[in-house]
Image (cartoon, rainbow, N blue to C red; front, side, top):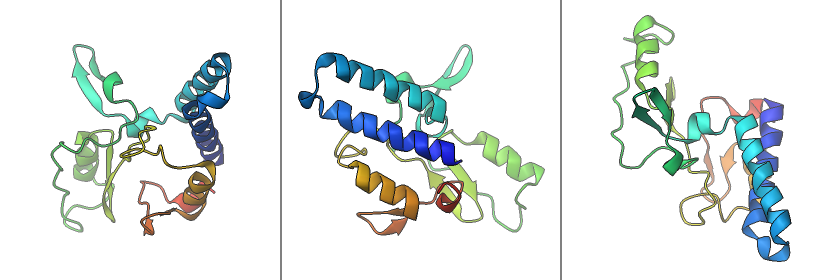
Length: 158
């Protein structure tokens, strides 16, 4: 898990440098983009932060919405009632498998993956390296002062 955190930090740093490419030549920017892509692949960020689309070959990541998080126009699934449906029961696992890759559920309720694009309005484009590191270490969104609720506790990553 620590390796994933480090890869994520590196990805964010690379993305920050790429966004501020006026200070770097085009060759450096291209190398940064290639490194960022490599880190996203190694960190498997698309697994949770890219919506899926159905194709003739089955479900695949939607390349038009890479790292955009849970689509805001998607229907929110109804979570089975706990304790009527026990976590890890066959019914619960069936429910989990019915969810989009950008949604997860547990005893805490539903978690929806965030937009990790460099968009400054809806993504993480305004974050600098310091903010990103603080969020990953504390498990709290810096601006909103609320807990980030991923499927796995942030404390386990740090």
